[in-house]
Image (cartoon, rainbow, N blue to C red; front, side):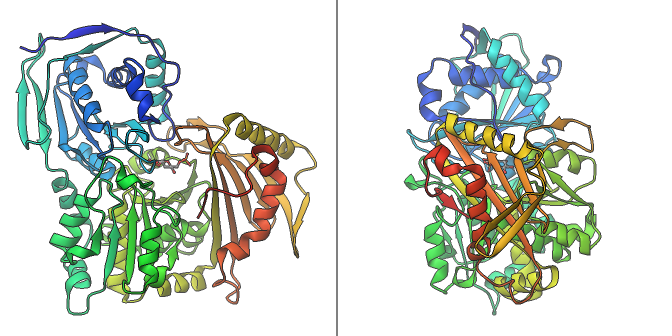
Amino acid sequence: MVKITVVKTKAYADQKPGTSGLRKRVTVFQQNQHYAENFIQSTISVVEPAVRQESTLVVGGDGRFFMKDAIQLIVQIAAANGIGRLVIGQNGIMSTPAVSCVIRKIKAVGGIILTASHNPGGPSGDFGIKYNIASGGPAPEGVTNKIYDISKSITEYHICPDLKVDLSKIGKQTFEVDTFKPFTVEIVDCVEAYAEMLRGIFDFPALKELLSGPNHIKVNLDAMHGVVGPYVKKIVCEELGSPANSAVNCVPSEDFGGHHPDPNLTYAADLVKTMKGGEYDFGAAFDGDGDRNMVLGKHGFFVNPSDSVAAIAANITCIPYFQKTGVKGLARSMPTSGALDNVAKALKMALYETPTGWKFFGNLMDAGKLSLCGEESFGTGSDHIREKDGLWAVLAWLSILASRKQSVEDIMKDHWKKFGRNFFTRYDYEEVNSDAASKMMKDLEAAMSDKSFVGKKFSSGDKTYEVEIADNFMYTDPVDGSVSKNQGLRIIFSDGSRIIFRLSGTGSAGATIRLYIDSYEKDPQKINQEAQVMLAPLVDIALKISQLQENTGRTAPTVIT
Ligand code: G16
């Protein structure tokens, strides 16, 4: 019989989940007494006591430092709170999309994902705890606010300190816990259920032909030492026949090899370099927890994530899943470029514009209004689960290549010819002083609210833009009517070009300012130009209007996408 202990604790005021769960430095979780325990108890407390005994929670993480300690705490606290069953990935490993898949498949009440996504790991890196609900999607604000409220007033937590599980052994382990029914922990293969799902979505024989048939293409997939490695190995290499050396950095490591597991042009520089060499036809990188993806064509041709979802939408019939389900609607987050809107308009599909955060897509999917969506932050996915899905996006692209028999670059260039091109860039200013960042945003919003701002003209070089709309983006959920305010400052010009500023909700220290620029061009003479060149005047105007340099002391961004 395992005993339950009630531990007195003191509440912390800073456990408000951000865009995607609670993300902090590992040291914050480790050094502050009961910090992790408090948050885990607050999270489990949102599962109604009356249903706990019959409930299953799925648990998995991206393999980062402190994950295994956190999983043992989750096991001990879940048992002491009367949760009936936990399903955990072997060695704690399970990608974010796979957790979403398993929650849905086994009808779990929810899941806990241990990840700080694309943020660095290791003892001095970041850690994160995120709660997903029964739909398989990230908890909506109503639930995360509840977790936060509980965390602010918590005085004790319940734990079974002597209960230890062997995370390496696949199978069931059962424990007698005090007055509760037996508590079960089931350790599962992390790939199996997810691979089974993908087989039902894509044409695996066609993908196998593409990757290992007589006229196969060569791919290079970089798991960046994150969780997606085992999935790439099993699905792309073992099952679809791509050679073993087409997958790199596939062993999850606690510190991601000392790198940022962030699939963008800066942090996935090795892949970019390999692809520029010209040996491979298709390249992709994933983030720590496997929900983000970056797609590159031969010679390093970069597919902007906003374009990626638009291209998948335009070629959606290449994916058998959508032939079965039809396309209910498309969606993008507000800062994502309008490339998807052009496809939606041409193909007469509904288009939704949501705030940043995958959770906003979930309601639309559950209501049968949304099939395919994407974000500029390297997230692409569909209603097959309720998380963005890196490997799904790669198989979606490979399905398009298999069916169109063209290169990535040709597919994108054809796309721009047909729909016009949204030039897009994002500048990230990471770990800026929080006060300076808030002041910049406040001053900018004040300037934008001035009556004379709309109609104002701004020039840079030979370009002049006139402000048509200036606001702080607000979203009313079309399904439940909930309102999300302050979702980013938008300056929209009369030609449709947009400058957007927002503060990231996923950083763990200081503030990250994101500047997004989106500008549409349909002149065939101009669509193949360099994005950074095309957008330089708008970047210049954005920096002037925001006084970013004066406010933050930063003369250049940390990352340019
Ligand atoms: C999370 C969310 C995404 C969001 C991204 C960026 O991704 O799931 O929907 O776009 O954060 O957020 P921010 O701009 O606030 O940093 P992930 O991959 O970090 O879980």
